[in-house]
Length: 124
Image (tube, rainbow, N blue to C red; front, side, top):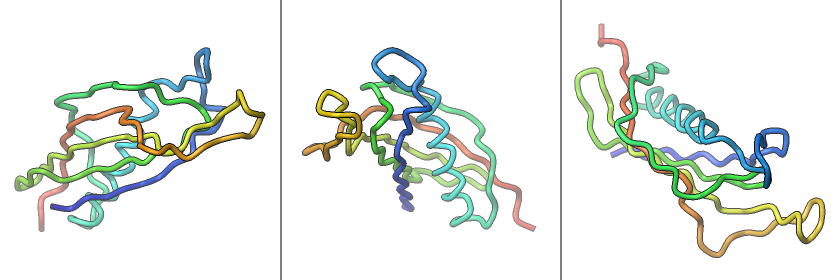
């Protein structure tokens, strides 16, 4: 099945909580971007996000992180596509080492997993 992967730097302006934490909806928005590309590649249409069947917040996402967001199509119906998503932290800011310090993580941290469904228009 098709897998699409995006990478995104999390700007400090997106932090909402102490410790430079970013709200969980940030990752869900990135899942939506990946789902849009999947729909374009498979169906030539941006599609619409219909639902999440499961969302698991497993680790914090912080400003200064570089995220890798992947979506894999696991089921294709006539108009619906089920997608498994994963958001991994691959780089992390290190403000304890300096204002702009950061590091590449040896092992990515899985921050969020989800399963969602998108729908696309009927074929003409």
